[in-house]
Image (tube, rainbow, N blue to C red):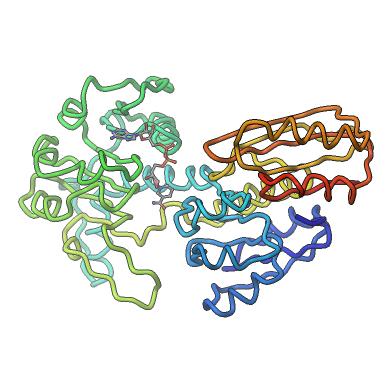
Length: 406
Ligand code: NAI
């Protein structure tokens, strides 16, 4: 790991300009590209990228990561990180950062709006108007005030929705597998079945796990109140789509809003089909729950800042693949040694001895280990950088190291 200040940050896929403004603090050259790259172009860019920023369309597999000689950190300017081979990057001491919360408010807002739209049967009213039909009627149209919202998954999104829904007068109950602090006047349902039975709207905000796969099946839909609404802005395989289609066609459910699907096209050029198309009072959106300009800017700020902190301080706080060390800034004039190594007994002792032999005075030490990997950061009085590099690189367990100077 060399001095990152002379490195290059490559940002692909039109990452929001806020990221650039943050990353300028690193002093590195920043190259920004609008689209994703073909494999050969990506290989070539990776020859001299010190940090790479991507979104969901760039896949970084093992061979690409192994053939990136300068690469020191990867920023996923999105929520998911499954497009990156996390284990290979971890083995090479390359942290991968993402933005797990930055778009959650956007999803909560969309969900709230959908509740109102479906309660008023707006999808149909709007479609009628677009085809020249003036059907003014109160039939099936309701206020949301006083009605019960059942939230499944009371995490970052579910809990924000809880607050927003109460603010417009809804009663909120929730179900989570983990005990969660109820916000406002919300309270946990005793069981999932109870939530389904009493809610006028059921909204899903769970992750994709084996337990949530097809979680809302025919049996669950049957337990829901007649004419109630279902919203899925979480993951596509949480709801059995055919069962939902039947519940809507048969009139048991009053409507649905679906943003995520079991199979989603990779790009806007591919066609999209779903058996939900054309059903009454159904809002379909192309996985845009979290896609707002504000969320994009917040993601750029969040991941940009994490990359800056890694470049300038060595902090791996919230990295998804490496031991996380989130540490205070260096003391005035101090040098900082960052050392990734295999987690076996004796490495720290060897490092201490090597540094003592060079007369290095250690002022602070931060260590975190996880599985096979350890990350240690040492704040030291100013040192002979090259001598230290030579000695520490001799330790066979060293994966990579860097020394931050002024
Ligand atoms: P989170 O991790 O903060 O919350 C998820 C909650 O679900 C946690 O409290 C967890 O304990 C709970 N949970 C897990 N398994 C459960 C189960 N079997 N039954 C009941 N509760 C369970 O996640 P966050 O940020 O609130 O996101 C929720 C979902 O929304 C995720 O699937 C995420 O991928 C999706 N999402 C969708 C977006 C879109 O554009 N439509 C954008 C952002 C997130």
